Length: 449
Ligand code: ZN
Image 1 (cartoon, rainbow, N blue to C red):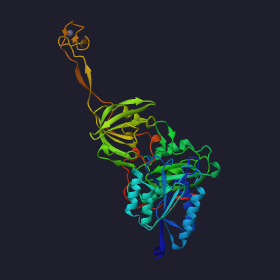
Image 2: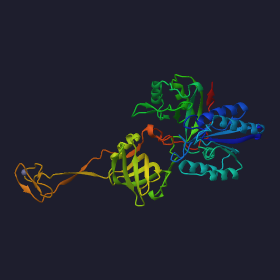
Image 3: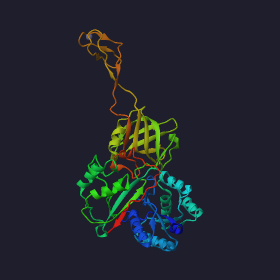
Image 4: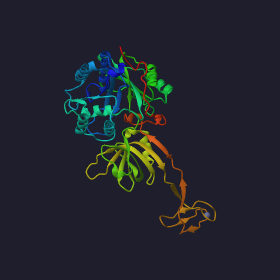
């Protein structure tokens, strides 16, 4: 019966970090500890929601956070006040481009208009005024700082309830006295964990460069983060990685990372809009060229539009695949649409290529001598052929065409882990997609020392 007096609240926060300090997940970690001490309980794991990676004003990772809590009504103002003061304390408000936002959204259910808003914020461009209108309509509360742009992400994080595919990330944080120093984690233990727990964790290492990618660079408080399919798995993985410096706290987040949530299937290339990320089918219409510095660019056409496709150097294996495409090949492309320079076509920054159909490749050979069977020699362009063995001449003979096997194979190719966006679904995750389960919180999903 106590349940009836419980209030439910979704708290969204975004854009507290700057290039020089902070991380919004860290603010969320401190906040959830504080809210738990006050007496709130959690209806879900904290949500770590990555938004459209292709917006021109994005912060580093463009991640927003959501806490979904239950509490006694009497705690309402204390919870909101503590949230505001904690976000203010840990936001880099003096930094240009840091525009924090907080949204308090009341009620158990998140309306479909808010989930639709979240989807738009993942795949395209949404505005602050759209966010503010929704906040008014549903009697939510919002606070914005500087340009207030963080309100957009805060509301989107609330709206992304992860009822489709989702993943987990366990993030561990450093002691404040170690912020800004070189991170110390035993590299071998990371490679061992990756081997042991594949395919249930992902993007731990870049196999091409033999490089660890779970530790960020830069001054933020994160020691390392491990992404995976279940809360139990990422916690197990965390236990296998040996930190060589003290861990201050850790939290398991539920996330849209690694789910391709940013990609929208379009039916015609003419529908491709700058700043969106798309999936489209088309035919290669201009052969791949290498442009400085080691980028590969080719064009595709589907009769509605021509779009340039670029595989940049860090895409690694994907760049090598792009290089092997031929005019006429049918492919499905995945990537971010860049705003074109004046007079230039749209360019797609490739994240994935699915090769659907390859044109037959032929090689030409000189014909054989009808008398002795030896391969004929050319007498010059359109001059015919002669046989060096029996000296016969064949002025009308033509080169013959033979099918040649393509090196490239049909299938899906994904950019190397080091250049994957947070949202890119890695190959390892294919076949492990989840749908609409209500996740149950495991006994211990966060801890602080
Ligand atoms: Zn001959």
